Image (tube, rainbow over all chains, first blue to last red; front, side, top):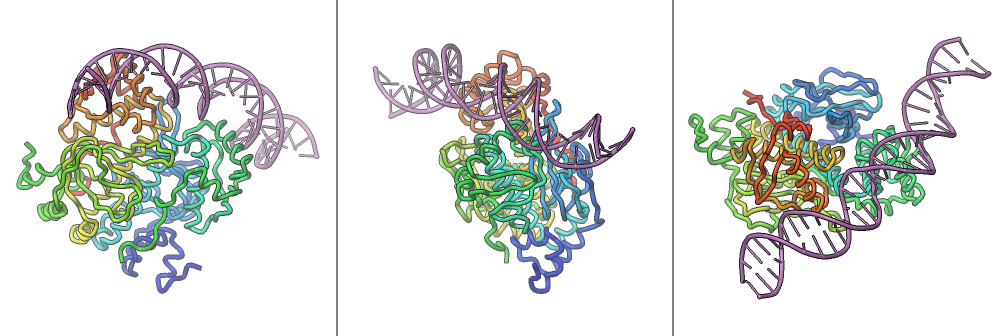
Length: 251
Length: 251
DNA sequence: CGCCTAGTTGAGGTAAGTCAATTCACGTGG
DNA sequence: CCACGTGAATTGACTTACCTCAACTAGGCG
């Protein structure tokens, strides 16, 4: 399905390799360095954290299948979900680079991941600097998503925020073949969405009803349906430029 | 003032070199590669944008003196300030890495900067991979700040948010010698703060009054005074771990 | 002197929160 | 097979934090 030249095997099996290849044209040698970063394969069950806020010297993970979320807890017990992760995303990369985790990561569904060790990562930079560039790109893209998220919470109303959220998720899932402009499967509960977009669960429900009654989008039984994609995108002021990658920037 | 061994001259003159040195112990050779990244020195006057949202192939800048802010505009004219930049910070690094700017950068005061070109940056990674690690660290730290900002807007009340904001700024300024636990000079208007923490300017004023009357902090005539630092930090639930750097992680 | 920008304060409106009750799907043990 | 408990979604009634509009003050400057 994703067989492209001789690199097909690795690219097909590794969503991360596929994602990075969109930015930096990686050679076979570079792909194999990337491949060797993948250590032990592990699975986690839904609900049991894999990265713990405040803990030092965590491993990072590359997500192979399933959904996770990264979040921060406040002293009063409230939590803010910073982002959801889907296959091909890093889990806890910041924890490794900063040496201490400023957040937690919880599986939303059962997960398959591979471990990555900090030392291997920095070592890989020395061997293949272009990989460093590629990772700086991933980190920048993640930051761009967090920034967009920040703008939404700071300045958009609840309905626009929800619409934007559903669209961004759809866009990201489409990139890894798990969604389309028609919709996508989504294992999130209304409580998770509430913690992500900074609303109460009750209000999430009301807003979803509004979007449904206005014929824009329907979220029901674990599936998001875009009833009118263009109208929804216009309503949400959805700009995709921060997500799109037109082609490899480094030849 | 900051003369440390033979590297003193560069470290003293370059706030960025000082910041990075806290993370990766850079050799003379690496410092001189970093030094050669600094191209033309430029100045900008307050209010005239140096990076423009949506524009491609921007240069990045390293801030030498002055304050700037990065922000995003919404179609309805509202804006959300994502972060303020102080000396030693990058301006528009994400724009360069992502090839397109997802945000704008505006000087808050008159600025002194030096330009950095994308090609030089990626070239430098090849010569000194440890510089790549150091930059990934900067990007991760910036992201951690944006994340903390997101949590504040999503889950903290207006007063806690303001308190947290003042404390984070104080902490960052102290690191570059421009502040202390007593307070700091701050050129921001209440309108800028409003756009940063997602409040109306009117409400910013009320909240500042509340903090002042409660004996926590005073912001007046361009100066922030911490009237009771510990009480303020407790009130804001201020955790510094995401900002602190205990020492070089890479020897 | 008058204008502009920044800050301050009051009055009243509204988006979103909280509390609470109900439904529904489901799994599990008797 | 049914009784029960649990977690998710749904809806209504009431509260509140923050916004908007508006008026006024105080400093800086051509």
